[in-house]
Image 1 (tube, helix red, strand yellow):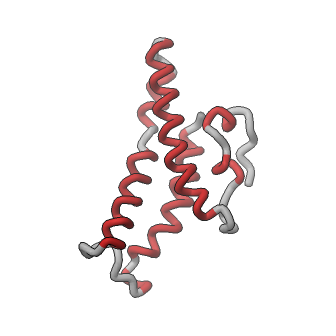
Image 2 (image 1 turned 180 degrees about the horizontal axis):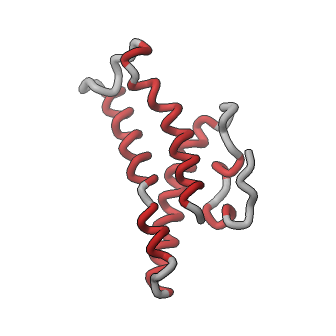
Length: 113
């Protein structure tokens, strides 16, 4: 799995979430203590956490086999979190087919839209 997969899916999700926090759009959500604001912050935090795999993927090359297995499982879990969030916008024109794929399918599949 490639870091670029994570960069693309994170950018897609962030493009959906950012306007919800943007004061220029008249939004008052995201910064208050109401449940909607809390949910938006939690979702954004989940996306940021799940997308932070660059270091793991980089360490995989030099890791022994047992550590590679752990890294692979962690990366797959993080991808599944992002994939589940991104699929909420499956009907969006910027949604890529790769966002529906499982982690193990990405290495063999083309990354085109």
